[in-house]
Image (cartoon, rainbow, N blue to C red; front, top):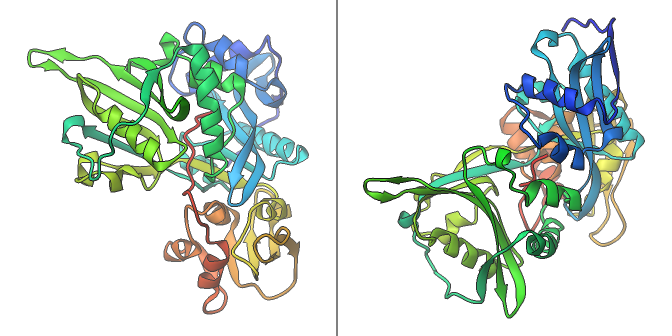
Amino acid sequence: MPTDLSNITIRTITDEEFPALLDVAATAFGETVEPGEVETDRAVLEIDRTFGAFEGDKPVGLAGAYTFRMTVPGGEVGAAGITLVAVLPTHTRRGILRAMMTRLLEQALERGEPVAILWASEAAIYQRFGYGMAVQSGSFEAVGDKVVFLQPLEPAGRVRILDDAEALELIPPIYEMHRRQAPGSIDRSSAKWSAHILADAGWMRAGMGAKVRVVLEVDGEARAFAIYRIKADWDATGPKHSMTVFDVIGLDAESEQRLWQWLFGIDLVGTVKGWRQPVPHPLALMVTEPRRLALTVGDGTWLRILDVAAALGGRTYRGPGGLVLDVTDTFLPHNAGRWKLHAPEPGVGRATLVPTTGNPDLALDISALAAVYLGSWRFADLARAGRVTECHPGAVAAADELFGTVGARPHNSTMF
């Protein structure tokens, strides 16, 4: 790719420069900045982690990062949440995006974050930088009255629609308890909750209707919550409202199913849609006709391993056991080479990863390692796709046994 950065400056931005740079991002994505959007985004923006590309005084590119804690199997690690990556169409293919990405990842390493994550507008762009699809994301669209629950639960407790203050008090603790058990999930700051996730400015609606926040309370305790939008639609035959569900999270399986049953039973709603849903979806085992859900699967969170030793040492394994990985990484060469992973018995210390000259068990690219890191994919999946080389028979099976996870599948419903 040709590079021409002779008259381009990459640096952190100021508060005063942010509105113009948000316009750059909007132009790059074919959108417009709506009234109130600058203030909302600035409420969660980390200005010292936001870089602009300037041609003289003219802003031509933008890229930033959030500071997150991300759940991994058996623990959590620091994660740089890459966001707002955009270059004006007049300045693409000149190396500006690569230069901004380099600065962001260097900064993340300086801050001790072993991984970076993002939602990709175009996955091909980020795979060039070593990102792998670490979390899948599902969606569904079902005719509400066609969905019948296989083992319906009797109602228990009550569902309440929450105002702003109640939503901010009751919903985040449920999410936080859930996310500590769900690999790939990230923490949500109070600013993120109030400015984005629970907020409902008109420009946020995107034609999907008003946002509703509800909680299921059992014996006075909040046990599950849902966040959704309802778009009203009427014709000569009657109501045909559509509901778009973003989060349904419960502290136990029964509370979560009861909330799903309540959602599918809301009057006037003809179509129920789900965005950023878990894969596989628990609804597929709750209903009599799973195909009625029209479940689809796509890419969710893309993950970039920045520090192999710290990232792999931050999660747990089905030890005791060991594995030698021959890793290729052209963008961050310090990760490249052979690494010996040693995992002790569960509950006995942390895994270690050290450089070695020993014979490798598996050879793979850093993006392939990112794909198996959280447990969405197995090494056997990589082998079927031609993404890993087995250096001796049985190495793939041994690696899958060592990396095997139990409990919740990886999931992330937090956009950033």
